[in-house]
Length: 145
Image 1 (cartoon, rainbow, N blue to C red):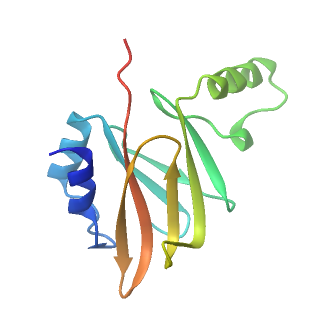
Image 2 (tube, rainbow, N blue to C red):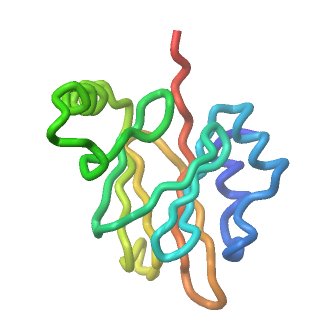
């Protein structure tokens, strides 16, 4: 199964039934990251990474290294010069950016969450009752030599 087929297999699922443990393992083995909204402020990363991110503004964005999401600007101690240098070095060397939008449309359909990844990815739709809850993404992490 390739990434496009994988995303299509997730498309149309209900909130709370986004991903099985077997699918999570398949994603991990293929270096895929599956991103979807979990609540009104929690973003789930499953597969290659298993983490939660929290949105506190709209639009929001998260930068990634090969080790996962980077610390956000708000989480950096601005009085600590070494921490500031590390933040800017990590951001400069980031491999990608996840844009997060709240309460918006995609292809004419309303979603509570819409995610966009900065390089090739596949999308899938998650529904809550009769409305679009989340437009999730699947992307592949690069291999590091």
